[in-house]
Length: 236
Image (cartoon, rainbow, N blue to C red; front, side, top):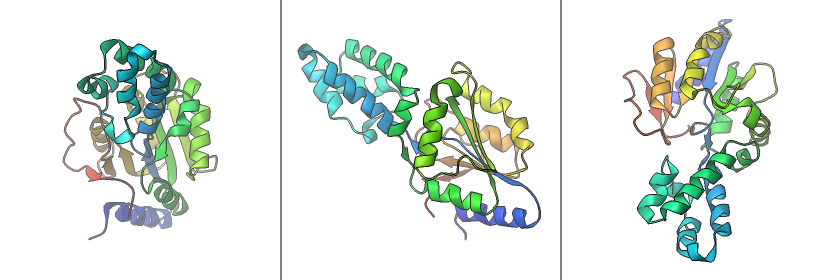
């Protein structure tokens, strides 16, 4: 039995040969990219700037690695005994610096992500990066990291779609983009780390492959619906 990712590549081939316009849609954060190193750099910088009376909190934070992070920063720090004042500082610092062009440079591609997206592109798919990142804060950094990490960018059949404003809800934005995505061609597959978005795409394009990348997702997310797929990463 074929690996699900190989099945998707084969379908791109078949649809391209048949004269269709196959489309594959990828989320970025938590899907193509592990952005936990972005958070680690931010909180480590905070730890280095804490006053001497916060040495214990600083030591706890400096010991953190990407694998120690939960989805929410306070859910990571509070069980470790970090003081509430420092947790508040950490959240404020994180919010100011996480959603920026500069911070994108710390993101690490999920295993196999760039080669898989390249394979989709070279087999004839239109590649769409549909992300909750916003144009004012993160467009430049996103383009730079996609280029530097070997993803298709800046070419025909590559679309980078970001929110026009930071304030717009991520899922609401992606729901608003369903019609424009359909206009690009035949949706062969979508890749997300949020079960709710996988379910949204599965409902809209039931004949396509809605794939959950099993990294992290928001607390309280709905169950993944039958018919959606799960893979740990993009390795074949």
